[in-house]
Length: 491
Image (tube, rainbow, N blue to C red):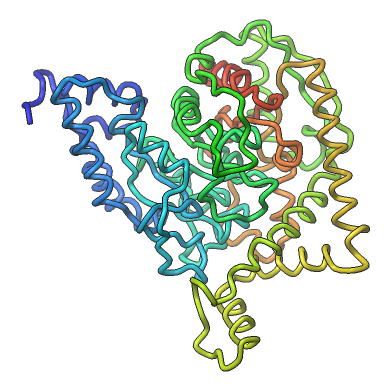
């Protein structure tokens, strides 16, 4: 292989602080650094920092270094490099990678190594990404703090005595601690946006169907979405452009063309109409979070956006509707984990019924069992109409409210979370309080629209605060433009 070009920067220098992925790609394309050296340096960082953070559950070092070597060979020949060439990326452990452990944060899948790759994994590698490993998460993506993992909680890099948010806390923490340039997470009711807010990074909720769910270990199939975390808006937009698009393996994926989200994020937000829903600034919002988000809204006004008050009066019904629909779908999806085909099987299995009962009782954690019971009850005879069907009707009302709002504005801005990152163990004995942490994120999940959580400052104690930017279905470009304006203001 040809030597590095003159003026080369060491991989260690490039990873001392977060570097935009476009700049890293240029270093590799110009042969000023090697993708293999960059990957090795990120693994060294993981080895140093992960014991404290617990962000990664497993590493895919052999596969990553083989991919990095392919990128180095392309660069040495002077061949054009794909958009994510050599970029180290982490993958949440609910997304399968062939031959790699895929646990979904659960004991019941301990040791499971799937025989295929998720579509998003294939698309990342086709774009040149170097996939470092699998990140920790709440069990089966059920949680708002990443304390429900069977493999221990993740700690927030901003304050290791606090949670990183959930369920994609490992991915958010990995990006925040610069253990990966970007990461994939999943968002069912806020599981990308809330950890992004708590950890001070960018997190994207794509439109439902924008990104293929093939290879995602399901929680709630009508709500689950895959999206990226990154250190800045443009990087997140770039990754979404790679993983988005129709997939014949996922019947719910949409056929709409994928825009150049990175280029769209470069456009100014001047003239955009921004709605500020009063219901998201009501009782229960931490005053320090409010102050940070209001500074972000002020930055949008300075950028030339037109602010407009809007109302979404049924927002207060979103949390109960979400926790009926999501748990009902979880009850159905998790029925497959029975100890028969794969996954944990209890050694106390003397009869078929006993195998089912013991395997599920021993394999699932407390929160997963709680949600299965809630969902099974909501779907049971005599209760279906009163609970599940009613929740679906509320879901339709919420979606229609958003459509009416987007007839008047281009985007909505809200707090991502009502509170900053809370302390480890603070809410574990109060599941209702934990569920209410999703109050500002579950609405967009139920409506199927897209959104971005972008950092908008910090509390006086230094805890990150995120602003949520919501946009109409398939209007990710608009959300990125607004988020970029907040980012550019440096609030």
